[in-house]
Length: 89
Image 1: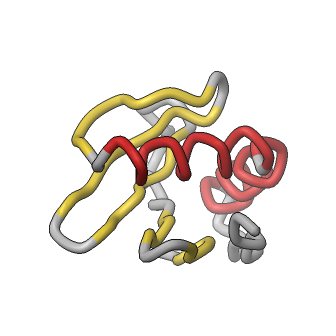
Image 2: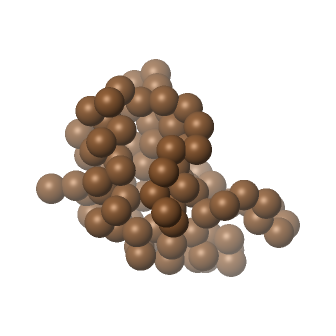
């Protein structure tokens, strides 16, 4: 599971889906013992939970990096390596 970015103690990862992708394009956010899954377009929480602060950071970052997240989703599902995405600054 490639790591795409890391900021504010949050790690962003994306998974390859074998065969035909069966989920909406999405990414996973991890912070300590918490984890959440976010849709890319539109950006939104699909499952799991983070603290309110962490959720706001992830959503702000994803809104700014939506095109890069979509590109990485397409690359990963095509068997290509992902490209790191700059953290929230």
